[in-house]
Image (cartoon, rainbow over all chains, first blue to last red; front, side, top):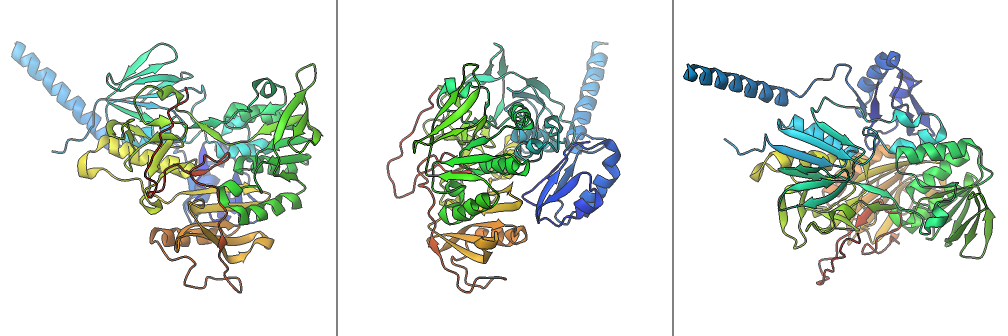
Length: 94
Length: 457
């Protein structure tokens, strides 16, 4: 599983280092190090760490990625219109 | 109905952080047309900051830094193929494999590359490295794993300092050669530079400032053996890392008619590229390290930022403005910010520290490597930098946005007995610094002549 941390946001609260210690570790007082591609069995701990981050700095690749709704809706609308268009053409031809 | 650009052909040249984020954002904005991503590296997009940190330490394999995807982007990928030219009139991008791609909207996100050592035959010696790509990281990691007797880092900007830090953490002897008076002085000025120098020496770095490396010498097998310095000293080394900053990838735009050169590709605040005449294009956009753009808080001077956060924020604005038109377009106004981890210290910066005439320590003390420094320009706060005091920077970001006075009129927590502004001692912004993370690439408004430096293809 893939993740990254927005270290501009990170303020070193270290919640992640408690919740997923094999993925997130502190270097010194507030510098965060992380494994960007941990094993899938870390998913639950990483999701918990991401949810607990006080500044929401952890970006985790979703387990089942979905295309943005905006895009999906337009593609669907276009497909429907095209289908209707075809139908019309078909009728006209008849 | 609005006349949004929802369908058509978008080509994104450069598929790193900015290019990928822009592609994602285009779909989020509802763009349903064809999307082609062109990148000269074969790998899928990856994150670079870990390369000089956990990857070099051996804590995380180099191929583990692929960027997480927020969602599918339904794009055609052309990886391992560089763009070699742009025809603005025909709206076509030329590729190294001879193909051409037609576009309705183009995003330029070609970023920067590591500046090479100036003598090619010395740069070719085994043991001489740069660090920018994942392949660079792999090669340097192997070299460090082989436990060299001494590593020489040439240049003490952020990348060089982070590499030196990793070497010390791995127990390796390391010498750092810096042309300037102190590490990080090009980005943070002389006062913090002194603190950074102390930090390096306390951690056992053999730091040599005010010197340059005049030659790297190899043996008959082509292996690096020795470095020669401008002060006539010599040093036996088996690994040297050239960390002299970055070169903007704009050569492919030479002759295109765009305002592209060694300082980057100039754009308006909406990420639209300027042509050579300074006239804004409406179909060519720029984002990430290769871009230079005007920022109202910095006198509308053009800023070129080699910042992770800027790549993302600018890509999102570029994508938005590629899809929308007229008054629905947005300016890229975010306050620059970056971080660096070295010698166990978390260094963070907001604003533009090089845009300053004075600096003052306003919280903590440099001796303890725990402080906040405020930077001011003509009585206004323009930047703040913290060493292990990250929690305060949000506050200072808001202060910078409000053009708060400098020195501050309030007394922050843990303030020194007397806040004493001193000259900022930052490099002349008109010069391209050797190790910038922020470059003010414009010219002051009171300078009437603007000289354009054409691309040196």
